[in-house]
Length: 87
Image (cartoon, rainbow, N blue to C red; front, side, top):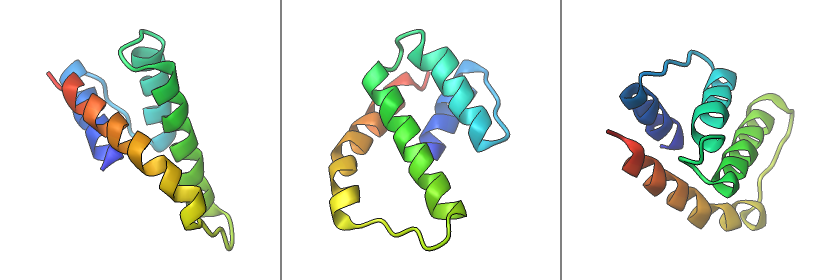
C-alpha cells in the first residue's frame, strides 16, 4: 500500500521510478530534502525499505510481532501524509 501511495504521489508531481532504489532516491531527494515529508517519515521509509530488502533477499529472515507492531501506526501516518500530497 505504501509503495502504491508513493507511486501516486510521484505521478502527480511528474516523477517516474522504475526500481525500488529509484523510488527511495526520488523520495529522499524531492520530498524529504524539500521538507514535503518530515525527516522522521523519511527515516521510517528507509527503515521499511531495508526491512523489505531483508525479507526478500536474506535467507530465513523472520519478522516478529515485537518487530513489526511498533511500525504499524507510523506507517499508517506516513501513508495518510502521502495521500495529502497527491495533487
